[in-house]
Length: 144
Image 1 (tube, rainbow, N blue to C red):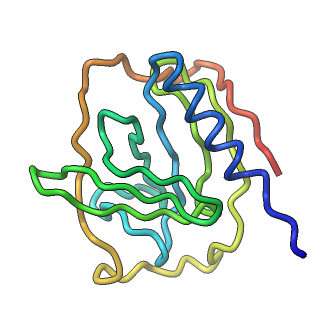
Image 2 (spheres, one colour):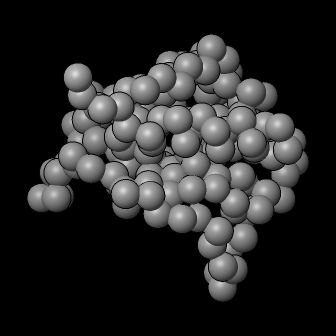
C-alpha cells in the first residue's frame, strides 16, 4: 500500500486556518499541461489563484486534485490544479502560510500549448490589502 503525501492535508489545513481567521487563501501554482488555469495570467510558469469561498464555487480539495468553479469575465469557468503543482498556500493579507516543493515538472523549458488549457481571469472582491512585498520577510516554510 503506497503512502499518501501529507501535502494535500497541509493545504487543506492552511486553507481552513485562513477562512477561520477571515483571511483570503491564495494558491501559488506551477503551471504545466495538466493545469486548467488562465494562461494569460501565468508569469514565469506560475499563477496565483484566490481560492476563498467568496471567489469560488464547488471547491474540492482532494488528495490528487484541487478543482473549483469561478466567474471570469462574468462567465462561470472550471479550474483544475494537480496538488503536486501547488507551490504554496498563504493568506493574502499577511503572507502567512506554507511553501512546498513542486515535483514532476519539466526542467527543459517546455512550452504549454494554449489549446490544452482554458484562458480565464478570476474575479474576486478586491477590498483586502496586498500581501507584504519587497523587503518584507516571508512567513512561508518549504516542506519537502
